[in-house]
Amino acid sequence: MEKNFDRENFKEKLEESGQFPMLYMFKFIVPKGKETEIEALFPKNEVKLKPSSGGKYISATIQAMMETSEQIVELYEKAAKIEGVISL
Image (cartoon, rainbow, N blue to C red; front, side):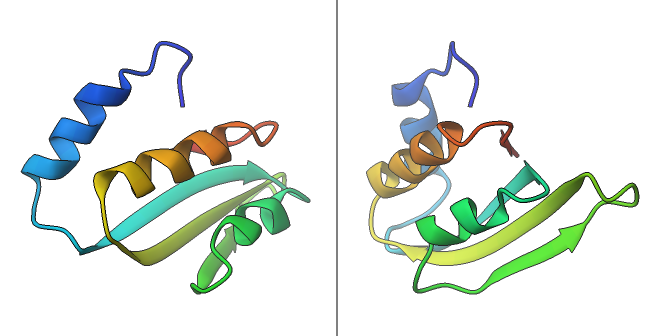
């Protein structure tokens, strides 16, 4: 996530988008070789990986049941600590 990420605004938007618990889709772009770090954030969920056409990046898509908006924000914050990750 961007350094100027507005945590509270994002939480509000999540809460307005539906009722919790909810099935939420996470999408990340990670440098090749970093996909296992994303997978580690979602040990109980299937992580769908798709290499980029050039092979330098991996697209990761995860659907996970989230109990609160806070859980979603925390996972994005953990992912942001992975070098080179882009959260979509």
